[in-house]
Image (tube, rainbow, N blue to C red; front, side):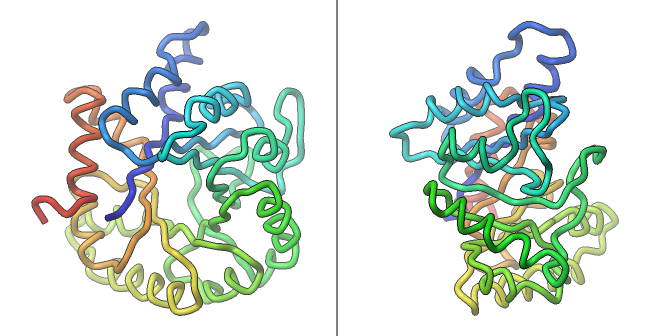
Length: 252
């Protein structure tokens, strides 16, 4: 069964827009876990516009001893600044089950492309080793049409996360066949060299089932923006339960 990891960044966006502690990132994570998700994802950025370092540490404490996993996403090349200690330092402090490395710049609204490993492989190799030393599984954010997927295994990554934005856009247009084929091919290439496959970005209740049918053995999907948006109408627990049902294959 594919694990659902709920990205709670948007809860932090709402909290930060007003100041104070409402809504609570921790309470939202607890609700998601109680509703059956298998993990919590956060993507702290250096500008701290949503998830902050203290949120990461609080979530790590919440998940300690739980079968649910903490997944921390971020750019490993972004240097520390102000109260942001850098991704590797944050992972060393929080010890998440998984670190997902993403090549986003400071100014990006959201992640919108995967790594170019022909350019970045040798910079990533020692960072992956450092994350392994603190006990993190490492996943690399990759485009489905990347020629470099096999390189992820060569430099020590455990998984890739397929960037599913192009698939979601094609699905919305009613023409997802090509993108689904690319994702399925990328998953098979990764699995052939021993990598597990995660997926994320713009997945929602409408497009997730078709994706999981066509793309083999997806280990985990990380979903935040659509899930939190849908939860405004249906409620957080009910929305998480609906996603976990899709991940379990119900109704496909």
